[in-house]
Image (cartoon, rainbow, N blue to C red):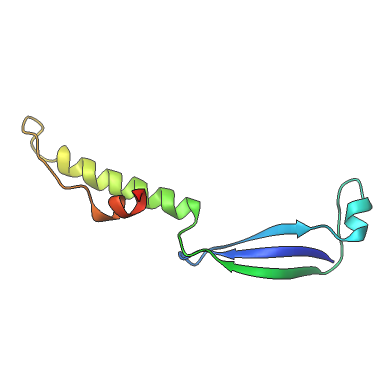
Length: 90
């Protein structure tokens, strides 16, 4: 039985990662395991996964840019940086 860990992100996504191979998989050149996979630990990460974090940053950036380059491009519109972007950058 190969051992796995689960990482639970605050965005409700989760990842399973191999912690250690079982005896048969260690000795197999392709590390093939046809046996039960055992979950050893569940880790609550307390932050969004990398994909969701990148999406939030992109959305905050697009929101910020739409404020700067809105309807009139000749006039510079000063827009405060969205609080989401500031909280992510900390």
